Length: 228
Image (cartoon, rainbow, N blue to C red):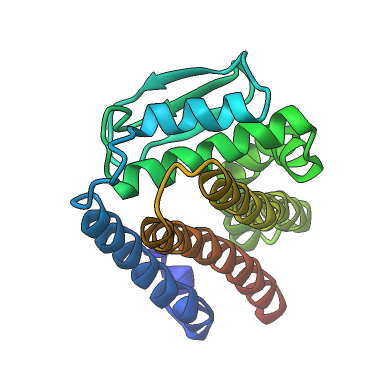
């Protein structure tokens, strides 16, 4: 995030400190919570892939493919190809089932036309481009005192900030749908559902931290622009 640039070696870097602390804690929390419940098996023996399939079927969704994917916590739903990818589809751990249910929640959002998800998907290209160009343009503008670069850099990064903010309701709603589906489908016990909530809450913290970091980076850019 360009934190090593000399431009940031001043008071403005302190703006990011709360978000940095939150990000470190969020990463620790999600990894430790997932690792803890990855060792706890569901009483029913249901696997992550089976749980996702039953949740989708219960929602009347039959056109979403479930695939495995390499990596840890790399699970995601791809709305473009209607594919739900799970990092540990064969696991019957509470953690894996909870994450799979969350991703199934995204598939349900897509099928139901959940507007925040549609908006987030629509602005992905703009947000990716904005996050790549914002800092180089902004600091080139500062170096050469070229106002259009500074302005465009701020506007470009604003798109990335908007993406992280829209992500919050999308992720919270997917977790809510996951908990409801697991409970109403009797896929896990009440005790296991409590563990699922812990896993999903820890994962949600990472999105909160990302949004906080992006928002404070934007504040930092505005602060640097004023100071110049």
